[in-house]
Length: 94
Image (tube, rainbow, N blue to C red; front, top):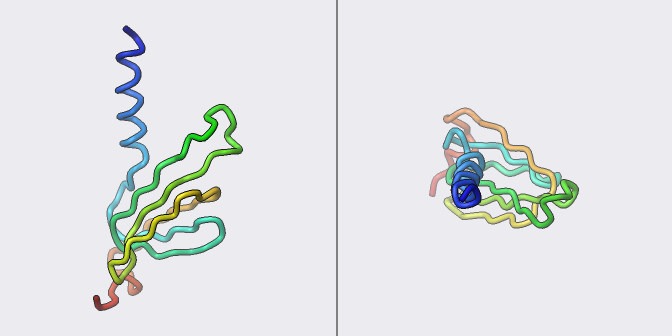
């Protein structure tokens, strides 16, 4: 019975914890490459071998200033930083 309660609770926590806290522009540093994400930013941990933190990677999806969706499936080093809502890089005409 505890397992039936714990699984949905854990799934909900993971989903809530992986979403961007603010939907505005973000600076994404993924494996040494810098991207400016203008909208639709979502990152989720890939749990290949949960017991070994050294195998952790991230899947990152975002849209750039031109509205092109980028999917980075196996990011090993990830830093996401909020940018001001009036970031010039996200003002490019579509």
